[in-house]
Image (cartoon, rainbow, N blue to C red; front, side):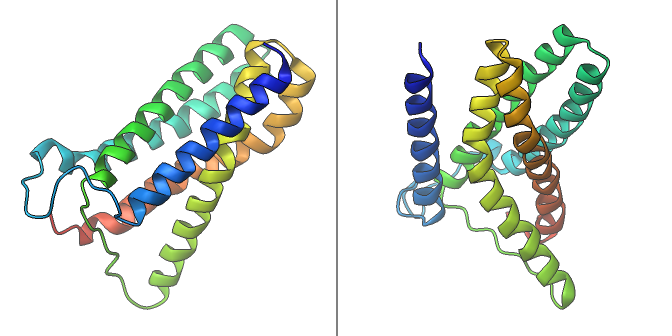
Length: 179
């Protein structure tokens, strides 16, 4: 495939994922009608998502260390694992939010502003990082090192921020879960 086709695929996937998440956040579509029982395993998904995000944070840092040590094979393997885990996170996130379960932060005072700052930057950067990660991933797999490096200068710190703040958001909101 040529770069134009890849760019179109990445754009299409990014827009599709963004729209799905936007629709689910607006609660327009839910998997379960009002009053229907939600399977108990669904309530574990936020914790699972935090575990996945934390794992991805560690893997991203180790991957950076591996490439700095010129261990390309391990760097690739770690990035593939991180990519797969992030994909599983996205599926889990979509399933949880498609249930219509409401979660509300209950903190007060200055910490409330900290929480919403972290949450809002997390959400915005999560939307921005998807196409960057996909393009970085593609360039890396194609061994287009120059393009990969240019993209990773942006995608790596944003992706790392998103994974770390995903854990922070979970830790801050989980005491206020009502399920």
